[in-house]
Amino acid sequence: MVSKKQVNKFVKSQESIQFYKKIQGALTEVLQAMPNEDFHKVTKNLKIISLQEGIIGQAMVFPNSKGKFKVVSIVYVPKIPMNVLKFIIAHELGHIHQGRHNTKKGENIYILEKHANKMAKKWGFPPTEKTWEWIFKYMKKYKIKWPKDWPKE
Ligand SMILES: [Zn+2]
Image (spheres, rainbow, N blue to C red):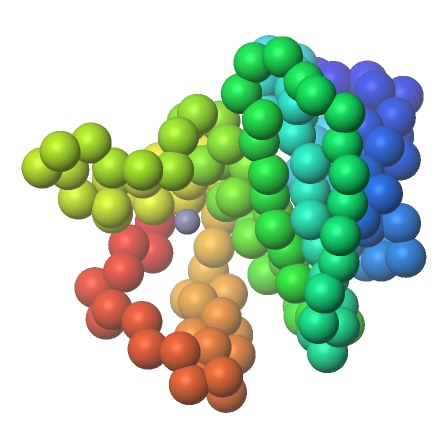
């Protein structure tokens, strides 16, 4: 497992979440659950871009990095249940772990989604019925339509 010091160093380096203790806490827990190898793979050159609901814009400037530049965006929803937030963070880091966000020719997007869910589950943050219920109810509030057959594990 990865050391607490390494995790704290990474979390501290993420300037976009400095005001959001809840996201810091969830991120710390997800990263601490990863094997060393997964931690280094997902955090290398990774920037998490986070905004609180209601905040419209944010600009950040980063120095050049070698290798793939990776970005994870998270909207900070103050009332989000902690287990839903941890699943979402783990799921997005699962996409990062896969190293791409585009499908190959003839490939279904659900393959990428299933991989992200599988990684979240591997790190100990599987979604439950209630997790999806909360997510779909939240999206409905913003009139976001989502496919009924979306992979839930
Ligand atoms: Zn996804």
